[in-house]
Length: 229
Image (tube, rainbow, N blue to C red; front, side, top):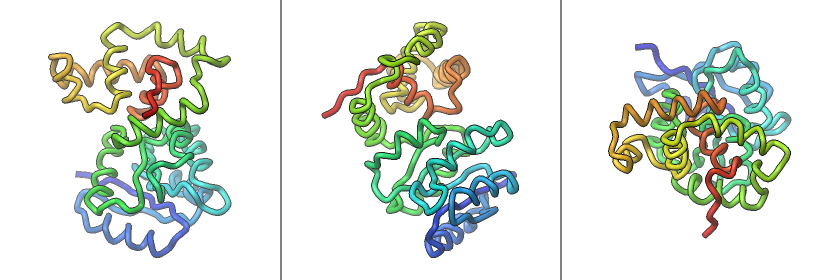
């Protein structure tokens, strides 16, 4: 089995060292590079052909958000998955990171097993979105900023959403609610494989890189309305 190639991007050398020891201790993954800022992260993503980048949001110079946009916009790096690292889970840049193309985010205080699982989840093309992010943070910030359905891009979203079947829209709503394929399958009384097929088709029709992008599109398009508790 080819190990998951991991790139570490954080301006704190001590933290990078700790992550490297942890990641390299796993037989199914290896650290292929370390970056102290976003510009280095982009360059190393290209040269190392990393599968997953652990990207700190706040770094000097080119920050993690800008670096995420640059990686996501590069067709040659379409297979690179980015997990944003943040000190606080409720971070104003998290939603911007997801919009920019990140697959999800993780708090720096996460347990070692959580970090390793995050790498595996991202490498598999799934979204790494905690319940707090999906049900609270995303809804909260999109409620403050409004949805794209209310702006000039609303018609574009409407056209893409119109291409979805009724079942695909239903599945998309559940994805935006933070449910896994197994949970959605239970709700709709279908197989997880059927749900995965609907998710993949929705991603293709909406031009989403991964599941995380589906969540953002569902909120920004107005298909799912934010509920702030």
